[in-house]
Image (cartoon, rainbow, N blue to C red):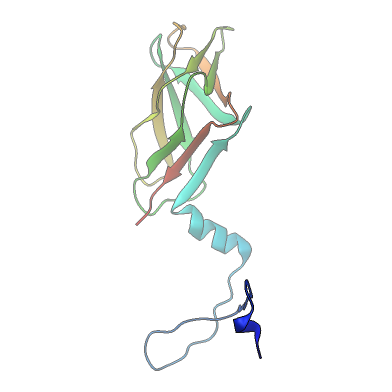
Length: 150
């Protein structure tokens, strides 16, 4: 009876469903997988941290790398790119053995709500245009995600 007068007291409640109007409906039970897909309509993390795989792209030009990312589910709208970037945050390893880094930002290109989005960035080295490239994170602070908030 005195939990509310105690510092840092916690009152936890679960299993509540708010209704609009006078009539109550059946309680809606959703699986974790269904709830995750609903959340991914708004936010999808591509990679965070060091040595994480972003995907296979290609060297569109000698200094521009393109990356196509296939969405986990359709997003609610065309997403924006969320990113933490800096010097050498993303590594680009071309099929020819050449390597470079993305030091700037990723820019969306051919973007829509799904099933894929394409983005590009400038590489700090001159690589061979037309080569496939493996793109990974190269810094603990690196982050690349997609967001389609309301």
